[in-house]
Amino acid sequence: MATITDTSPLIEGLSEAALIAARGRVVAANAAARELLGTSIEGAQVERVISHPAALEAIERPTSAADGVELTGLGDSRRHWLMRVSPVGDGTALIRFVDRSEARAAEQMRVDFVANASHELRTPLATLIGYTETLREQADEIDPATRERFLAVVHDEARRMQRVVEDLISLSRIEAEKFSAPTDAIALEPLIDHALASARRMAEERRSTLERRVAPVLPRIAADGSQILQVLDNLITNALRYGEPGTPVTISADADGPMVRLTVADQGEGISREHLPRVTERFYRVDTSRSRALGGTGLGLSIVKHIVERHRGRLMIDSEPGKGTRVSILLPVAA
Ligand SMILES: Nc1ncnc2c1ncn2[C@@H]1O[C@H](COP(=O)(O)OP(=O)(O)OP(=O)(O)O)[C@@H](O)[C@H]1O
Ligand SMILES: [Mg+2]
Image (cartoon, rainbow, N blue to C red):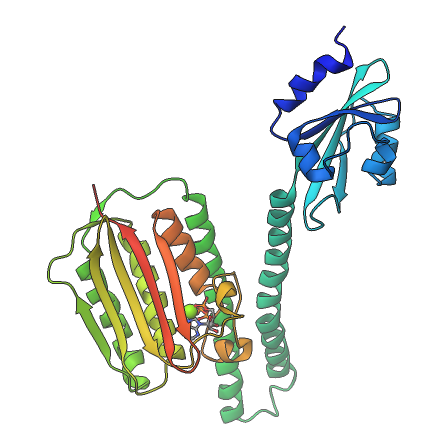
């Protein structure tokens, strides 16, 4: 049977924080454990090192079937750990700390996402139910003009729900494919022209001009054409939507080493520093009611981000409040 001193090199080889406890004391700890719990834990009493009642209970009475104990507040208080105790005989136990912070953050994101998505659908649904009830219950009293107005609201709200659902489906499709980077060699120019043609009407409504500045020779990119079109549509719509009416929106593209840089720039209110890191989150909007009034779902930039990630590209947003926003993406040149 291995003695306690023999086990030190063994735990030193583990990448996770690990220690050996025997008779209420820490008898060995690896570098990761010393970093997490303190440099002088070897020889200390276990209850001084880990002051969580549930954790101490698990160490004193380890069961081989235990899933471990979830801990927060060890070292950096924002991190979450799963403590696993494995008895190695002789009243000695191997204690390991598995960092669960990322899994917890992902879990939290999933919970928030479901809550946000439900909320986004519940609001228009309530309006829809309210209006259709009124239309049915007071059918005889409602004049044709009011009826038309109510039906227009019902239609708009139904369309909003449709946009949310379509964007959600789009997002989940892109996520499902994220490990397979596109390999088709695609010419960017026709996609830019297509996106510009689709945006023309909105630009006219906003009295904005669309300026196309594309390098005369552009290498083909390794891309999924319809996803790049989706990116362009999202970025140009944002630039028109949040740009100052009457100001130009510029779409430029040029080669940058092994990548092609695509930029959409507007002159408008911009995005302030505190909002900037969050605008690519699902459903995040700087001004929710305004985005809603303009038909936004708050999913556009998160779709852009996922598409760019799938392409092994980069997304950069520079913005100066009061001046404007410049969104650039780098996409790899086709092999
Ligand atoms: N060019 C821009 N200028 C200023 N603010 C912007 C710009 N682009 C995006 N934003 C801000 O970022 C938020 C998120 O953008 P995103 O494209 O994800 O959603 P949306 O435009 O509100 O809705 P959707 O794109 O789903 O129709 C917007 O609500 C807006 O507040
Ligand atoms: Mg948008």
